[in-house]
Image 1 (cartoon, rainbow, N blue to C red):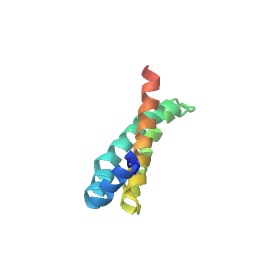
Image 2: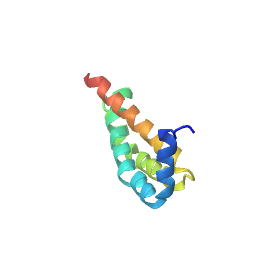
Image 3: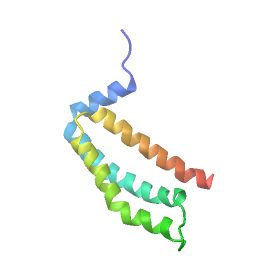
Image 4: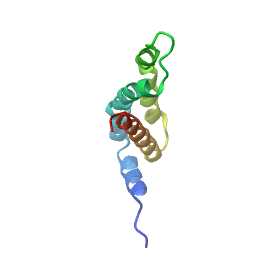
Length: 102
């Protein structure tokens, strides 16, 4: 008998505790994703004519990013894939931020 993959084990835990998993994913994880996106967007957006578009746009769309990150785990039927998608986005945002400083 083969051992379960980490995805299956994590998905089983998330399915066993759906209220806690949705609360964590839609609360602090979604807020952290939105803050990291706001920090990463000025690094990839062009400056614009006034030189401030890359700074203002992330601040303006922060509520939209937060709302999307919050509603995704609340409305998803399967929490395992949802958690891994959110983890992948978090890793991508951290890599974008660190690529500037390293």
